[in-house]
Image (cartoon, rainbow, N blue to C red; front, side, top):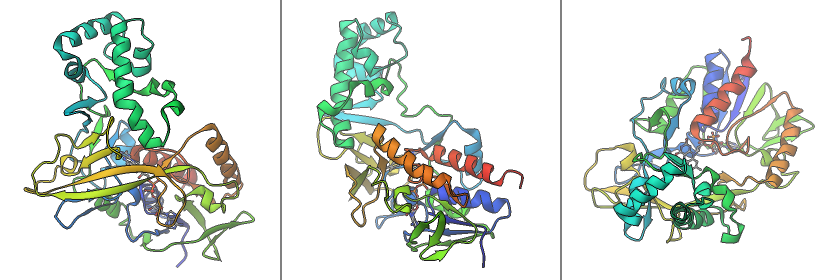
Length: 381
Ligand SMILES: Cc1cc2nc3c(=O)[nH]c(=O)nc-3n(C[C@H](O)[C@H](O)[C@H](O)COP(=O)(O)OP(=O)(O)OC[C@H]3O[C@@H](n4cnc5c(N)ncnc54)[C@H](O)[C@@H]3O)c2cc1C
C-alpha cells in the first residue's frame, strides 16, 4: 500500500494533520512510537475506575471558533471552566490572584483600601504584577511584592530550575492580578474537557478509511542529503513530522533544551481530596502542583479519587525521558532556527507540533498551526 503522506506521531498534531489530509482524499499512514494514540493528551481509566491524564492535566480552552468546530466533530465538551488555587499555609488563594484572594491575605477592610487605590491608579479590573511592584502607591506596591514572593517566585524556580537571582522580575509582565471576583483560570469562549476523554476524541479523529494507524512503532527517521529515510527505507510521498526536530537532524546543532516532568499518582478512598481541580504549591513542597482529575473530568464516582503530583526537572535525553516544556531563550531560538533552515530546504518535509516547532503550544494553538500548515499544503486540492 502506498501513502501520499506519512505522519510521525499520533498526538493532537499528528491526528489533526492525518484527518485533515484524509478528508481531502489522501491516503495517510500514522506511525506512533508509544503503545497508544493521543501523545501528551492520552487519558485512560486507572485501576480504581478514575479517568486520569497520564502526561499531566489537560484542559481545553480556545476562542478560535474554527478550531472548536473542527474538534466538536469528534467529541462534545463537558463545559468545565478551570479554577486554580495556590496553597499558602492553610489558605487556598485563587490564581490568578483576585479580589477574594486579596481579602483572604489582607482582611476585608484593607482589601477595600487596596481596591480604591487600584481604581485611582487605573489598575482596575486587571493589572500585571510587574506594574503593581512599580506602583507609586505603597499599598499596591506591597500587594505586588506579596504576589511576586508568594505566588510567582518559588513556583517559577521549581518549574524552570532557576535560582531567585536568575528570575527576571520583568517576566511578571504577563502575570495578572484581578480586582474582580472572576476566579476562572482562562477567559476563552470555549472551555471544557472531551466528555469521554481525549483518547476517544483522537481515536474518532483517526477513524477514517483513508487513515492507517500503527502504534508501538519507534521509527528511526533520518535525513540524508535532504531525503527522508524511515528506518533505512527512502520515503515515498511526504512526511508530516511531529517529533523532536533536533533528533530528526541527528542533533547536528546540539540538543534543544527542554524541561521534563515526573508524575506521582495516588488514589485515595475519599470523595474529594482538595477543593480545586488544581492546587499550585507556591511557597512549599518539591512538587509544583497537585491535580485531582475528577474535578475537571466531572466524572461521577463515589468514595475514590486519583490525584497527581508533578515534579519538574531538566531534560537530559536519557531513555524514557519525555521532553515537555521547551526552554525558550535567545540561544535556543537561534539553535532552532538553524534546524528550521535545514527543513526549509526539504519540500518533502512538513514540521508541525509542539516538538517539531519547538514552541509551547496549547492544544488549540497546535490544532490551529496544523490547520494552517495543511491548508497551505493542500491549497487547490
Ligand atoms: C504537562 C502539560 C500540561 C498541558 N496542559 C495543557 C492544557 O491544560 N491545555 C492545553 O491547551 N494544552 C496543554 N498542554 C499542551 C498540549 O499537551 C500540547 O499542545 C499538545 O498535546 C501537543 O500535541 P503534539 O501532537 O504536538 O505533541 P505530542 O502530544 O507530544 O505528540 C507527539 C507524538 O509524536 C510521537 N513521536 C515522536 N517521535 C516519534 C518517532 N520517531 N516515531 C514515532 N512516534 C514519534 C510521540 O511519542 C508523541 O506521541 C500541556 C502540556 C504539558 C506538557
